[in-house]
Length: 276
Image (cartoon, rainbow, N blue to C red; front, top):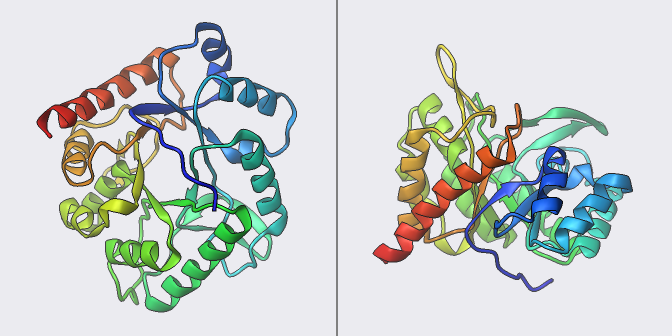
């Protein structure tokens, strides 16, 4: 396995709209997260990523491993991902606890899984295969599903905790998703956090949701909401100053807006250091 280097503080997601600003102004930001699927084709995006990687630590975050799919693992995709990781040398490689393919056809959404023992063992085995192929442990990210399966035998947090142990992988903990799920499905988000193993949490995501009539919708297109900031502070008390990313995927704002969100996260990280 590749030895894991470290990152600290609050980073932001790397978006093409901000390439020129970052390369020209070299802002003070500790790390950036690149969407790995955007760079597998090479060309100008990869050229920019390599330039930025020369100045900043990078993590790679993907959407196409389809860890929960009944399809076989896509070895062509895994080969491209390994080549990108070997070239960029990211701090982390991550993807989602989801499935995104049926019979080799991919769709633009992250579909949830039933939380059962059999699914747990199936996904753990696939994660182990991915990690063996990549030569590194990966991070998996929790979703914000809008449905629950009737035959669930485990809670989401029980499933995650067991999966992290069985697959010997790490968790990218999306605090916004935890809050959205807790509100939509009626559980205490602190119960969720209290079950997760502290030593497996290697990165945190923060994002904004949208309020619909009957539920919260995880759009990742707004500033972080006050109640998510509160839950984030509670997460820091449990897990320590975990490197944190501001994730903004739709209606992407100016770089300064993202930096302001990251600075807010840094404020809470610094407060945790002072209190502990």
